[in-house]
Amino acid sequence: MIRAALAPTVLGLSALVSCAGTEPSAPADAALASEPESVADAESAASDAAPVEPVEAKFDFSGELTQGGFIRGTVPAGTASASLGEQVLDIAPDGSFFAAFDRDSADSLPLTATLESGRILREDLSVSPREWQIQRVNVAKRPSGSSEAWWKRREPEWNAIQDARAKETGATGWTQDFIWPVKGRISGLFGRQRIYRGEPGSYHSGIDIAPGNGVPFVAPADGVVVLARTGFSLEGSLIIIDHGAGLNSAFLHASRIVVEEGQAVKQGDHIGNVGASGRATGPHLHWGLKWNAARLDPLLFTGPMD
Image (cartoon, rainbow, N blue to C red; front, side):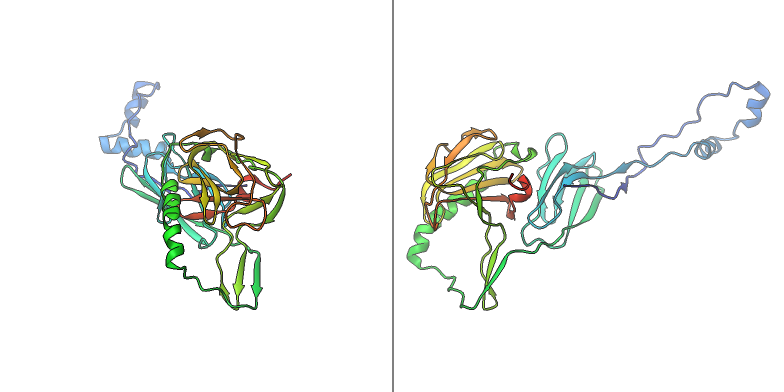
């Protein structure tokens, strides 16, 4: 994990108060000799004698500053709103926040806070690039267009997924250290991609775990079930859990769903069983993580599987 504190920005000094202090305890003559002739002189003397340090404001955060990674932290005191790039952040009552970096994130993104005073604090975060598992094949890429009949079936599924991910439940699982929903052989890594005669195909948006058909899997963090349905053309039996702050988990290809939409779940609760429903070549659990529109690497949330 990377621990960082953004470079401080100096706030205005309007909140600082100057005072002349109390009378000295020295003899009267000495006191008179040192007494300033005006209020302005008194303020100047006090400033020279005891300079006041300016107030500093800063972000404080920890996390993985890399493509597919994330940060958690607190905004500067007095923040009215904050954003990472163009994405507005959800700020908890205690000032804490979550933000993340897409698989194809630029190598620098601005983290910005607008204070209640109107002052804007900005720091450009360096996002380290990653080397993805790329397979180059000497065959032409399949046409990306889908038939009208296929899209007629797919469109309501797509809309249901988008609607589910847009729900705000107030869940606080985003504050937790995530656990593996199930352990087993990792059969597909996040971010892997095929290049078809120089033309890139879509990348793998999650991590595949193959522990065996029917094995139970659990919620990796607290949340609320915002989608739990069977029969999706690609995903098969699909569960989506909102963890709050724009972060959600999707679990694909289940053989069994044991939760309902609207149900609150705790980290470690059984939510389904591994299967091969939908478009899958064999039983496995596809676990995907999204923060708003950004695709994230689950491995960075859990660490290596032991």
